Length: 124
Image 1: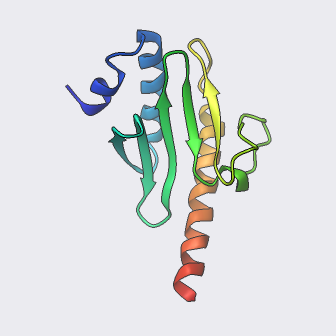
Image 2: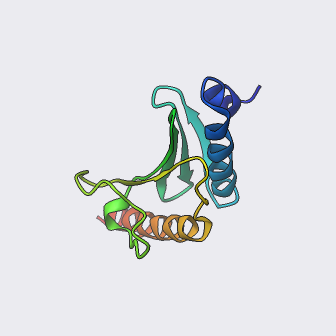
């Protein structure tokens, strides 16, 4: 049994289907993934840009958290969490269409921001 299967095992089947769809989409991008048991999430990192996002499966929804979410363009208004200092998240519920194009754009922008930030840190 994979770590993702173990993470999803106690949750409703519809959550597992939705979470696997989001994780599968993110695994097509230039990111590495790791189940983080303490957070009960699947975290996605870029080799140079660092932590990009994490997928959190809950009993009733799947949340996709973007580490630098406050800095990301969100023309579709999918991100919530304006009260957070830097991250923002989208909530997906069973039966929702996974906004693949929007997630891909957010990931691409997050990688670009991370790369720009890593360049700034190196030049100091």
